[in-house]
Length: 260
Length: 135
Ligand code: HEM
Ligand code: SF4
Ligand code: SF4
Ligand code: FES
Image (cartoon, rainbow over all chains, first blue to last red; front, side, top):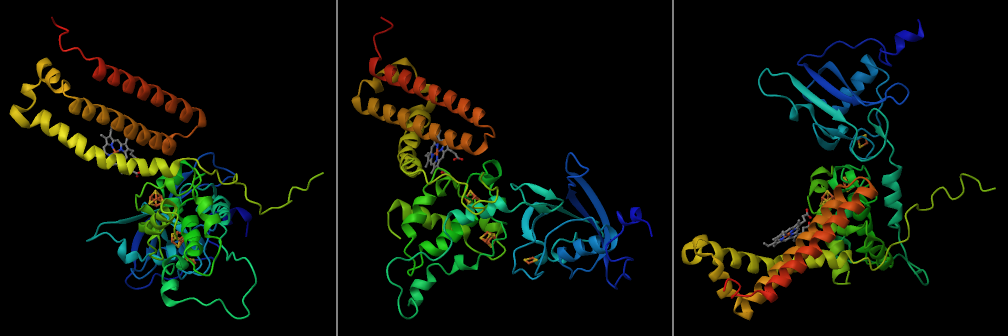
């Protein structure tokens, strides 16, 4: 076997038999290889797939049996780790949570699925982006418990009602679907972005935490919550169903009335 | 010599810029918007619907209205609020969409100059309007 044959072959050899009930779909992927490409380019693959497949399965099929050079990130494949955020048919989704049957064209029309890297972060290769600017904004809001004074001897008690206040924002898996769907973030990478605000909200409204003032001060920055234009792209994109825009508005309200 | 990996996780962001006025700018947009609902809709109603609509508007009509300090103040408030509200809104749009710092700076300069000119000119006209100018 020669090395050249491997550049177009999949990483797991020959294609498996096509299962019953499979349909052929076109997967159009925006690709970029920093070693060869000056500009991103579109690449299309016609592959067999089942309606019950997830978009991630289609990417696996391509990588394993058609083109092993296709690069993307995934880990859990079950919507938990937040690794595989991508722009699928123009909206940010986790590839492992989108079912093919929800994207299929009606009748006999050929289905084309476009997949792009999430917008606003530098592309390393194909669908793989540099998440560092995203995590930098996340770290800047102090996303950890801040307390002063003596530690209690037993656990820090919290009422059910107090827990409820930030319940929604505890669900974040840091996938970046929201931040990279935000039009303000696209043009101005210096904006903290919805994910950082969600994770600040998680602690600002936690009755056990004492760092609310510091975090509110950070989010009152020129690139903080006031840059949000309330367009709800982030809420629509969140795979965890977090009411992202609402959380941002709650932070704005806390700043406005100086009350958490 | 400092090591390149020194403090790899220290934040790259400048410390929070306090008192930058963005909160007040945000609040102003909402409050001025509320006032503009009354002022602009009232203005449109008087100018375009009441008493035969636009056809009644002429020099005499304007002169008659500006004879009253109430309408002078109404138009003055509308001018200032619409300019500052609209100007602040366009400032936001420039901040959001300009890609280069120099573009952002010059677009904002253009905006501020036009705001000052229009506010000054409008205010000047409202206060120095002479109904007998044609005589
Ligand atoms: C009729 C009553 C009006 C109301 C209730 C109103 C309300 C608002 C509010 C709440 C915003 C802030 C939006 C945001 O921060 O996301 C806004 C933005 C803006 N307004 Fe008004 N406004 C009114 C009239 C006007 C007028 C007369 C002008 C033009 C002179 C104007 C120009 C703008 C612009 C350019 C923006 C920025 C748009 C953006 O942020 O995307 N508005 N308005
Ligand atoms: S609601 Fe705010 S944070 Fe969310 S996408 Fe719109 S501008 Fe961005
Ligand atoms: S708020 Fe939702 S979309 Fe944003 S990073 Fe967290 S889980 Fe992802
Ligand atoms: S692979 Fe873990 S969320 Fe999709």
